[in-house]
Length: 257
Image (cartoon, rainbow, N blue to C red; front, top):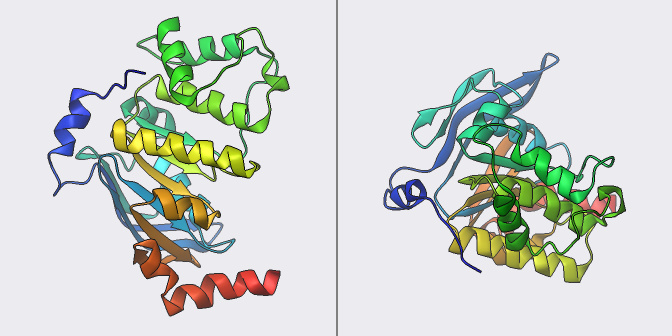
């Protein structure tokens, strides 16, 4: 398989002092309630940042801000040196920011081929069937194009959605629980794919994931959130040994069990 990276990605890889994507001082209020408080995030070319935390910590709300679905009360979001704080989701997508969701929702009234066609023609420049084949090859999606998407199992649904993103050559992926609903052998395939995207294609990835064992193998750094704040950040070993993380995360998990 021939892996492709853009010249722009290579140029940013030579600027270690300038993160590819970052946010600073993010505050978010919804319905009069403070959801995010002074959040700072940064990720470089080819870097994988894992995000963990208990339910209600603000992880999904953070992704809503980073992807452009929500505008923060204050703070700044920057991508490739450009302030994108006020840009909506579709404009960030055109700049090279892709997002996947915890539930792999696909258009179930279409076939696999029709889904690729819709993605190719979602916005200009329109892509060719060769681009779709490139995306499918990257994620190892081996499904005939005339198969109805409603018949796809969870892993192939995730692969289809990811292939539609990858054929646009994104520089950053925001991935919300890509291992949800998968069995162990399928998680191993996601593990391999994420390594391929980050380390060989230089795609930056910010990933929310509850499977600690997956993040432990692929994340360069881990950020722990609780109650809308970042309470710890560093290597997986560092955050797992942090008393604040145990108090906020693992003790809650034990109680729920």
